Amino acid sequence: MHAGSRIASVTLLIAGSIALSACASKAPKQLPPDPGPTTTTDNTGTGAPVPGSQADFVAFTQGADTIYFDTDRYNVDSQDAAALQTQAQWLQRYPQKRATIEGHADERGTRDYNLALGERRANATKNYLTSLGIDASRINTISYGKERPVALGSDEGSWSRNRRAVTVTID
Amino acid sequence: MTLRLSALLSAAALLALSAPIAAQDAQVLPPVIGQAPAEEGLSGTVSDEAAWQDLGIAIPTFATDQDVPTQTNAGSTAALGRSLAEVISSNLRNNGLFKPSGPTGLPQPSYPQVQAPDYAVWAARSAEMLVQGYVRANPDGQLTIGCYLFDVSLGQQLGKAGWVVPPSDWRRAAHKCSDMVYSRLSGESPFFDSRIAYIAETGPKNRRMKRLAIMDSDGANHRYLTSGQATALTPRYSPDYKSILYLSYLNGNPRIYVYDLATDKQRLITENRNPTFAPRWSPDGKWILYSMASAGNTDIFKISSSGGGTPIKLTDSPGLDVGGSFSPDGSRIVFESDRSGNQQVYIMNADGSDQRRISFFGGRSATPEWSPRGDQIAFTHIAGNLRIALMSPGGGGMRYLTNGWQDEAPTWSPNGRIIQFFRTERNTGKTSIWQVDLTGRNERKLQTPVDGSDPAWGPIRP
Image (tube, each protein chain N blue to C red):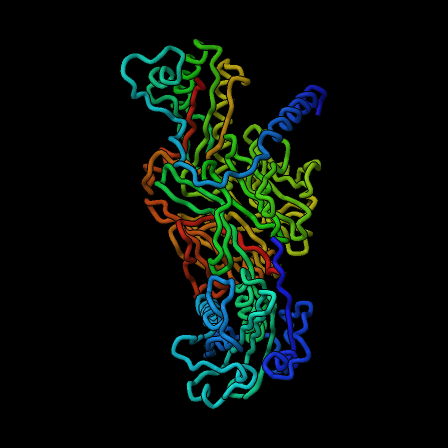
């Protein structure tokens, strides 16, 4: 480990401890409302979306906010590359905007492995955007494993739609 | 939770309870569970499971010296006597053990008969074994519960045990009695007096609410620990039942928390922003094993469970190294890795050295769990469908225990004779917790208030 990365990890640790003190909370006792909708938003509003908003990103990418993977794979193929170039164009137009990449897996795997796989897919997506010139510090990743399917069937068509990485910009 | 379950008592003490010459009070002794002093009638291991599983066991209502109110949810001592017999009977029946009958439809022994059964009556009913007991309310509000096992054809007592319990713990006495009967007749270690942590699921497939929940081994004393606002996954009871490791999406990122059952507070296991998941305890409770993703790669770490220690990285492959389960002696860890191209099961020493693959079955092999007896590893085999399977720690003797569409995440009973797992229904995504014994023949669904997944069976309670 060279000096640069050591400084980086110390910084991470400090940031982590601040987060920890905020997280060590008492679990709420009362019954909660249903979980809210997933962070993948639809552009269902009327009129033109606000430039630079998540709605604008969805309208701009026209479905290319999501890329898809083969079973157990995380490589970015040529179709994915085109989608990520579209995403990168928008992100370059709005350089102050940050994004979260959500990595997902289909239901036909075990839970823990799918969490690792979702993380790996989100990270591969992030790396590709970084290679297109997007600053890595603008992009977070989160894995949902198999917890948030978008296609609800138990068939190859549904599974292929669920093996995905979705880019969500932060308004 | 401070549950006191003091074992009683000898035949002499029992007599003292029923006889008018009650000068000697019931003596509270340290627990003698699992070593009930008994004649060498059926000791040793019965090798053919089918032989003892066919034993007919009569379990009549437990007698009481005086029908008085109790602070239990079962009612008076007489009602409680019936409930005790019901719990024991369903324990043995639900687990495919023996052929229990009663308490419904059986004669009710009187209090003095508890120790001196009318063998002829039971022989006429073709009962081979007889479980009788009594319940007595103590002046301090505690309950004294006694449990006796008789061989009807031998006309002989095989085992006995007794406990003084607070009213809230009456079911534990029934579980301890079930354990005494089971251990005495099968030669196996007990497992009924144990608890299960799992994830309670509700809602549609794409908006599933997942809450941490706990229950007794028979589903009773159910309790939700989290609200469902943050998705909860993969709990593990600590060996001392004082806390639970689990994954929560609290504050957005999936990370492992330790939930303290006495205070209902939780803390992160490690001060790190990276996602952490797949938590496991070492058998002595001193270490926490977990997986952490960093820049797309996942490795396995361990950290002291007392908090604040430095994580020790155990794997260093470019593949996804996930999960892990300690051998019972804590010296080795079985885990999964896709370093060979897809998920397979590997073994390493507890310090991370000597990593080698043990699963060579075709398909993928995942979620290995080392048996508490040390001789088997349960895992999920993926070849199209997901099924629960067993192998030896050397990777030999692979065999399936289930044949569902999607069965995953095995967890062992404390005695290593039963495996729980969860089953996902095709299309609906509905989940349920199931268990199966090592023959694969006795498979049944556990009753949970809502859907359930990620079961984690804790050890036998002290």
